[in-house]
View 1: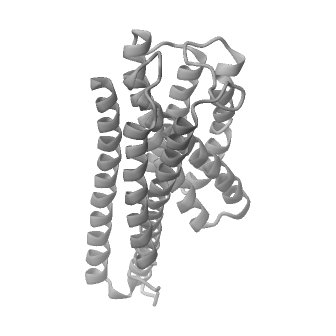
View 2: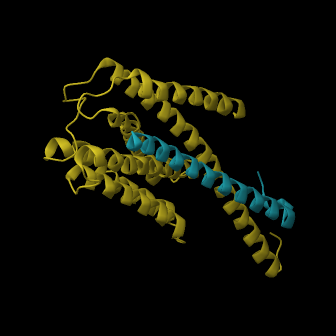
View 3: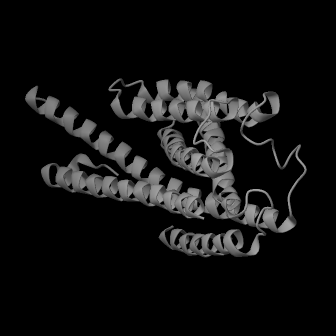
Length: 233
Length: 46
């Protein structure tokens, strides 16, 4: 397992470097926005990875509600947390792209506002998991995640359903782009997807370790109670 | 160009920051496990 992790890490590093080269050097400069348009190669893949992780979290949350498996719960929290990190990247790189192109950092249009709302929903999910002391916390979090995910399709459709400052889609309904741009975009998507997989792997192992420690504390507490009651644990 | 470089730099700062948090959490977890093992060697059944 350690060997597979190391191999995937090296492959991801190589892919990220090559994707960066494609984005910065090979992809042509966009005619109207100029060099700043290259933020696209980090902004869009981060959004795609975040939404994919939230979709996986949604499915895992449904499975958790049905089966109550700690492994599924650990995987669910991992995908949500890494998804929030990628969504943070989207919310930070977006304004850095908007300022030179639109002349403003932010506007309350449907796409931007629903993305911020999505981030807040999943931050709430993580805060619930962090600070709730109820034994039902994983179940409550799973239910929140199931309803919270409903915002993802809305974010996706927001610039199709409403007039937004955010540009209309380039792919899936738009006019497409130069093949070199598409190539750089797909490479960056693959690279960030591999990176997200690695980080989820680390986060999952951490969560499983935390669950085992909590179980061990439970054993210790039971042993302590049994000893004070004068019975063998 | 400064916005482009800022966006790329901030992306990696966010990811590196999160990886640092995970590393610190992992270290704390290992310390807790070691402490529990010292206090109660039979606490871990696995």
